[in-house]
Image 1 (cartoon, helix red, strand yellow):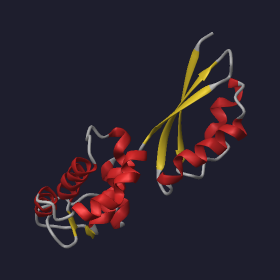
Image 2 (cartoon, one colour; image 1 turned 120 degrees about the vertical axis):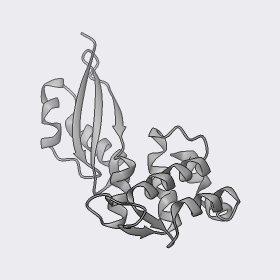
Image 3 (tube, helix red, strand yellow; image 1 turned 135 degrees about the vertical axis):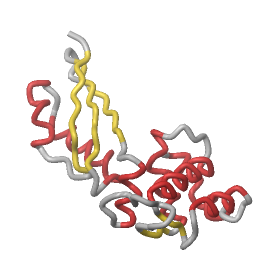
Length: 166
């Protein structure tokens, strides 16, 4: 028979039975799958997450692939805004502490090409700047320069282990 792919949208950490209704005929233990999905998506609580479930139709074994929310979604959620600024250089939509940028970088690790936490943080800072978010009251471009010059090395070191595990 082969592998069948199911794509479902779930609420992070709160997967409902309804969300998995398309898998009823797959023969997969849905309560076990739901438990696994709740654990795997817990870090995306408050977001809708797209999940691919690859089911081996013969053995009923499955693999789960999680597509994290977009960087923009994570940043908007963090500042409590509904949409990006239409004029990000002049109209700001919020301010985030540097550590929140680091946390978002860690959440996005699976979909970033960055090899280091420092590089990932610089990517997130660029996104923050493009949608009108400041960091610690400063333009993210300035914060990026401070990251490059080592100002935030101690903060980044605190999160290095979490980055490695992500």
